[in-house]
Image (tube, rainbow, N blue to C red; front, side, top):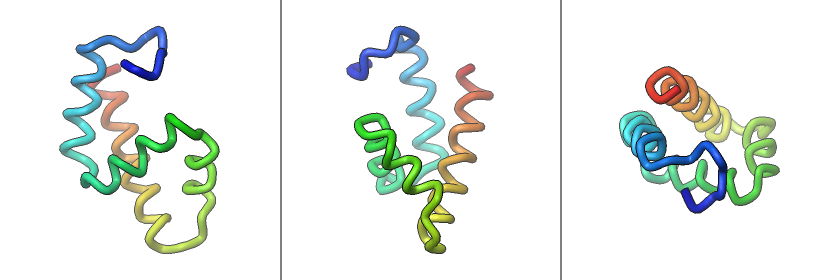
Length: 72
């Protein structure tokens, strides 16, 4: 909500948070939240060539897909 996006509303934010809680660890959620502050960090994560970051990106994409289905 604080991000100022026009489509943001409490129901949507609540839905996305529920999916995040089911899909991502607290650490993953903190990392993903930084993408809204600095979108370039998402690009860096997506293109990182480390197994840990590749694993994170797979989890994040699965979360995004699940959130789109559940909350879209």
